Image (cartoon, helix red, strand yellow):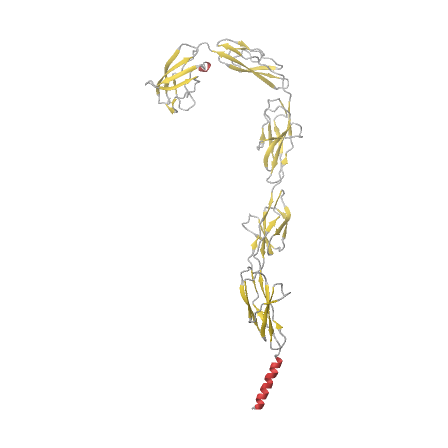
Length: 456
């Protein structure tokens, strides 16, 4: 019995002699967080001995600081940065041993960053680079879209730059970024590569003569074959040294009545592309014709005639011709029935006209005009106004109109055939009305009736 005990004790002592060594053991609990809001613990197992202390490192194990914790696990709470942990274990008087290391990785939230390189290419293809900056995390891949971001295509590229070559359509680019598998991915801002057709000014053509009369001209300039919008037309009086803007965005320009030789062109721009200017066309303006004089204004009584006295160099012609004995001579006899403004033109050897006017005032010695006995102000453009013949030759007149009850429904000094049968802005009813017409230069008072017949 004693021998057995002694043998067992010997075996036990031998066994303890074999295990007389500290074993640090294995830590577990490594993990990652994408936030400083975190909590958990590091566990220890497989150790031989007791925990003297846990240690922590915030620089990847370069230096360690004791936590003072002697338990078999180490807790953590709201770590602001990545931290590694290990335990120091000692068995009896044997030298201490260090456990394996477990780290808690703390990452900032992913930030997609900003792309730069958006540009407009005035070309049918584009080559360039999109650059990502300001991102937090690594680029997982790039994306491209040709439909404004509705659909995206993945581009295998994990760098912060993306080179595009030979794009033939508008394309939007963005990068996908992730700071850690523990963090959500984020998308960068987008950069749009826009392709625009280059500006083409087109071709100018002149519909008319390139040499025109001074002040009397009506040529047409037309632009065709342009690509882009017309910004404006321009004209130069000094063959392109200086230019004058013409506010016209149409493809046709009517340079009417110009009095000096001008070089015309047009500026076209496609989108944001540099503008293009069409090859110009010059319209030459002849010197002004010799002076023309139609004579001095005159006044005659109704029924009288007067000789007009035009002067100048070239072929004469007067208008209107109805009251002239011969409109194609310098000194025709005029027999106007009413005040008439005569236009005297002379055509020079270049076929250009110059003109002057003379006013012949016809005074009426006696009012003999007929006063219309009815009118139909129904808006059909026929007989809508009450008409008094020759009243315009007697501007110092006065009209009063009364209904059958003696109420005045219309009055005007200087009547000019402009009454449409209204009273206070409203149509008068059909029927018979009575008028009184006086002429300042005459003692006779004209009286009568006038019917309003709108249905006629």
